[in-house]
Length: 469
View 1 (cartoon, rainbow, N blue to C red):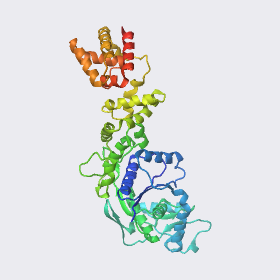
View 2 (view 1 turned 180 degrees about the vertical axis):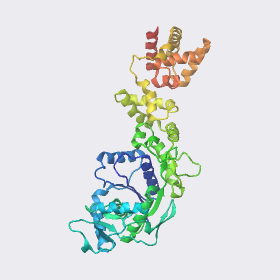
View 3 (view 1 turned 135 degrees about the vertical axis):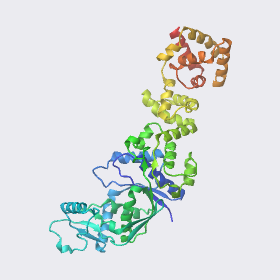
């Protein structure tokens, strides 16, 4: 059997953290088992579904690195197929027309509440003769489900879950306007797409019992079910916007790396021993449903940031520079040329050790691209007093004579220069940083000089000395 999983979001908003984790688990399970990962857009809510939301879902999945194996299926386009299945059940006597009006259903619900009973459809039209139907009323179509016995959900995460059939009413398959319901569409689509494993949030667990009855009514094989506990906030409440439940694109725009987000989502409710850092190849090799916990996971923005810091340090400098360039260009208002990108790449080794996000990297790299003459902040101006400038004038000649323009050689030179004058290294390095960068904070100044190169470094030093002499 070829494993087939699916991710089936509704395009009514952004792809949130919970949805992204569901997509990841489905993708990993398919890849782990040499199967296929399919994408289905459940766009039957025509008023709330938008093209922009669909594109945002696609873009978020691509950013996360989750590729799908076939063209996406759009649920609304399959309405005729859903209707055909409902009609087949009706013809087989496994479904029936229900002529209850909205008002009658409201009375039914109120009566159930008043009597302390569960609010369910009471089967008014289940066994009535269609000749009793009121004129001019288009019926809904309901599944004639078993009332006795139990439905057992054999779940790969939750274990066996038993639901008494008496607790479930005859669900609607087609509304009176002939539009298919979610329950019908999901079952038909899963069957037609060949889905073998339904991996989704446990808020769908009760839906599984209803859907199993529809699978059985059609004589179709059941998929394996795996209902993953939901994600909660740090306070134990269901995850919401106040906890950070924003769209995945927000984390992308905040400068998180996709590999960090993948790793974090993977560990959000799944474990492989004590492993915390799990690169993609190991995730594919190790992922199994047995590692999914039964308790809700708790979202922790601090852990996500810590993982991002780890992956920034490990990232290829060229790739990192290319990603940072996009953020930097937005700040500078101009596009970086090849020389600018090469400079950014040279700067990455010293910069990425101290940044938590790509945005922070871009902010920290901005001084590299400020046009001369520089503007100096207040702290830099304070550092460039008369005594400091006099020392920098003397240092300039030593720097100009240095043949080996590397961070190591430059540090050795400046340290020796400081010792000759019985000065602490900071008395020279700090003014030198202010002169070259225009500020008092930067990566190690000798790394900065190496990144700028001899000509740019000396030009900046000369301009600062001239400005503050």
